[in-house]
Length: 612
Image (cartoon, rainbow, N blue to C red):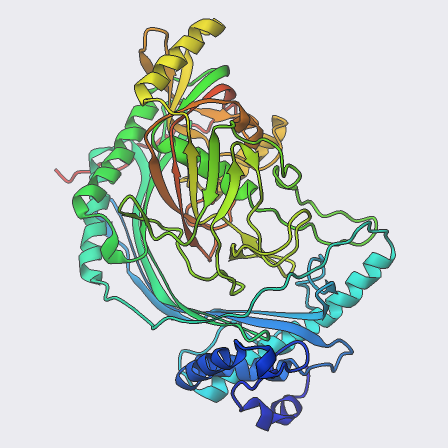
């Protein structure tokens, strides 16, 4: 480790200054008359640092890290991200409350780049590998003591500088053994920003929410067949900080609150079935009233009871109608990942990294939807038709402002969602770095995704068209999906089994969640609920063959955590997302029954749910 005394005191006087023109700039200081925006930017950042000890400590250490070249490699860029947050979590099952959990935390994310934007230590399998001893704990103390703050930041920057210096050497060695045609740069430029929101935190009535969660969970007492159930409430609020050597300085409010309902049941034949509900808002006070939450919980319980009594479905190929909430869910599940390309990292010659390309990376300019459908992502909208949108934000994790992006126009894919990591065929970030990623890159994700159709029909007309297609194709029935298991209410084990099933069936790619409420629709209009079905090879290519869309729009909000099927409870970093989409009718999709070996039902019956 670099001598603490040597680094702390070398140039200490310079480190205690606030910003001066060019102090953190990559190139020579630009005269004020050549950069008219600098004086205002400098004054704004200096004023914020003078009033905020966290921001000041960040820039003081970034300034010193910018001068590092002790291992032969110079730092050309570094950034620090910090979440100054407090959270409250309370859970209940069957009317019994678990101990609430309150916590305050300041998790920190530090990145150091050496080399140049054309070739640096990122985008390599060695980027995140550090062979030395780790002295930092990736978080800041809760007290605003300047020495304590700067020491933890210094330790993190020290480790990341050593990691970067080792990684670029190994990356250069790996590249010498291969021929790369038309190599991409490693980092796109972005304009500097100064954005400071006043910290805003609302009081959470912990006792009320504890009682509410307890009451809601007791609804499952009326359904003795349900083997496992829980209702969780969580609220997190605080500030997100971003500081970079390009003098970007961000402090924005970051709040989220959600109620999560999960339940499972074992059918008489041993099959496990799942259902759940997510209700999310930017503020606990903005969540729906208790009466609406009760309806959501009761719907989950009733769904499971109905599914458990339903017959197992059969293999099917034919028209499928996604109605209501299911239409928004299926668009969210497929496109929120496929619209966000990831850079394949550099590996050593002879070694490969198992990273599948997204389906849309190579399809720019190709048709991905019918010519009468468009798709737009817009994080700048706070509400739609007087309903709040969960995907709104003012800065991504790289300090870039989000832009409204027309992704699909008249069915043709125009662009993708990008971060500052270059992607072939695109030219810059559009401000969608929303999740931490690997190999020195952030992950792009959708924010507020709108699917729009210029040719629409009523839902009754869509069902009539489904019946007509059944008769035309000579099918005994069609399929109607009213709800998908997205975000998935299953367990991590169920997710692994889903991935294995997809692999065995040759579907490949990213797994898609199963339909929860799926019905056979017979030619006379009669509907029959079935269970144990899953889609086979459902990807973006199927959406080119959408036959018709409804004239109603359905908004669906969820928390994106980067896990397949947005598995509930997965990941330790989540962002809000919304989608607005109409019902859609597909000409042909494939569904098949789950063929896993089923566990035996319990030998000993469960305890009674009443105390008579």
